Length: 204
Image 1 (tube, rainbow, N blue to C red):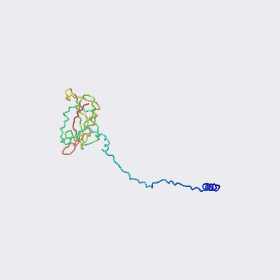
Image 2 (image 1 turned 30 degrees about the horizontal axis):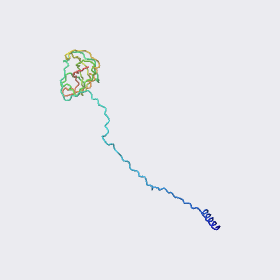
Image 3 (image 1 turned 90 degrees about the vertical axis):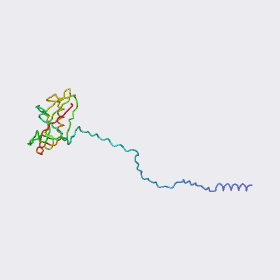
Image 4 (image 1 turned 180 degrees about the vertical axis):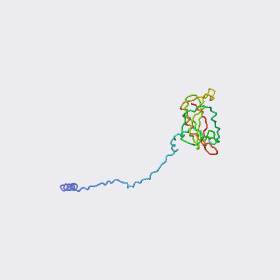
């Protein structure tokens, strides 16, 4: 019996003092193989649909002018307007010139370019204004002088003669007259300085 107990004690001692083996668990996380990043080239895209509308254009102001070309015009004679004194409104580069001025050349100046006066209509009045043009050898207007002013009557006829008028009207007429262009008058087939008489009908 004692030997049996001794054997059990020996077994317990062996079991107790037997070196313990440590089991290390190797936990290795599964890692995906590294893949180099690929940079794709940028893709240029264009907007579909209609193109953008063009930027608005600045309106071009059309001058209130009339151009007459290659048209023969019958000119008034100075005797047709009576002996009324001229209105003292003349402008332009008159300068000093010794060349002769013709009132009745063989071939009078012919109109190439006309500019109508721009006048704000503030009244119901209407006038017929006679203007004397001094045209140089190049066809430019050297001087423009108002010679006579007729107002229209109730029947629509220019019968009321006056010596003066609203200064804004006279100024606009002279300004327009100085912009006219002519073919110069000719005497013996040479260009000369000459007078010509024209009229403006204005509502003011």
